Image (cartoon, rainbow, N blue to C red; front, side):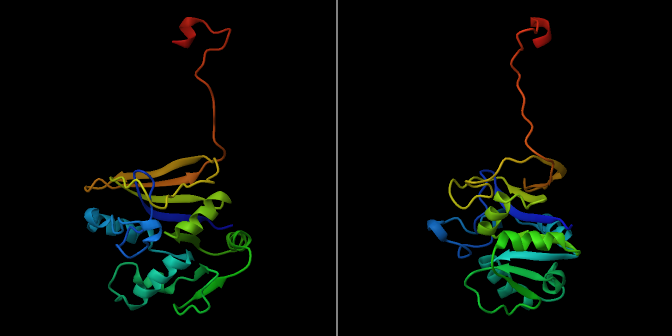
Length: 213
């Protein structure tokens, strides 16, 4: 079984909508598109290049697919990530797209959750999901995400599509790697770690004061 990895930029208050530009996704009156720009430098670019050096297949929602397809096929070979993205197989989740022009693209139809479960059960490289906020909610609700590779930016926006929205199920994660960049961006990788563990700090009836302290 292969791993499904979610990669995304996210604010301190969990917003992942339109990090790349003002016109990327104005859904819901979102007016803060392009919020990564003030923190982008070579260190962020190098992190992305390392995480996307492959091999991998992509699973993308319609909007992210269209954004990627408009840029990456025309990016020069010297641009970091271009070769890997263009050669990767792209599985696209959409009910409106009829034609996929980016090379190696496959349209997923029918029950999306079942289709992605089938992909995970196949032999092959890891499956990477970039952005794709609506698809991400489906994957999280269905417990299909094995690893989160987050780039956490030191800002709050107060509105917008969130990584962990309503319907997110309770699951446990463990920190696999973490580093802080000079711009204040935190790069954190989390892997699935079973169910949520709960407990209590309340003293049991038989505990002495010394045991509680």
